[in-house]
Image (tube, rainbow, N blue to C red):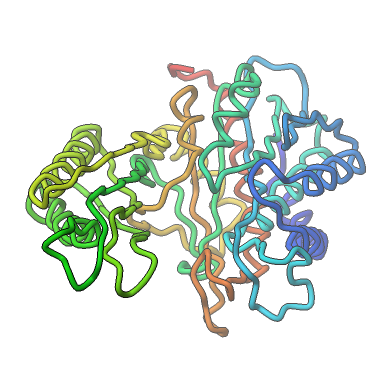
Length: 399
């Protein structure tokens, strides 16, 4: 077994390395499936610590630590940035105009690299195999499926991942069983009418009015059609219509998302969106075309037994941290695709510094408290320790 005191000492000794790596990746954000420089840099870092990098297509990396074993645990970090113009003023701010690590994925990379370095140094004590998975393209929810198509999960028995959140204070950690993040659906609706002169509305079918009516109508789906005990969200994120102030628009496009935790609710939201779009368009004498992308990814649902094992091991490494209940979030995470194949746990890690102004993930001013990087490292290692305990005890478990 691995001595927890030795692990804690190693984590504390390498804090500057974690920070240095995070800042290096923060400078080079790249969008989904374009993370070529990021991939190359991860490969270089893995090689430096004695781990052979295995490239994925078109981007992403995997690597192994430890002996051949009946059990391989996957540790996953997402590596893509966002189309956000950085406004932090940091000395290590983005060098790629219009792109930013505004969601903490730079910290995720640094956390997994930090855990990899420590685990590699203690490789002879590992009784399970560790598979490092640096996954591309999480933000557009396409990366996990692409990774799985390349067989990355074929030899994995269980998997762990985490996310840094600035609306949680540094030192607050959530490793909990059950539903943690929502199924994410996306819809696109084109309303078609008949354009014409603003002064002659009686000759037109106004697509802008159709779209506006639809936007207001869907606000009651959750409040009046979904069981209050069931969580759900319907959000319209984009509405485009018209070209000039004195021209009635003949086409309007609405884009939005539905979030939920159950199959019944998710299917009802889809039906309600499609029904309302069609009915409203018909009422005004127009038409609607609905594209509904159902199940961009399923809910993140943490395995009960594995969650408890990881929390137990995490508390040994992070005695001064608070393991708190954090309500399930209506955010999406394609980590959930892995959980459809193997038992998985996804943790929430606080990175908000109360001494500074805190901005939410995806904000142009978003930054993390770099003290949280050590927490990320410790959680990855704790997941490996939990897998080792499982390997030793061999409880009845469906792997």
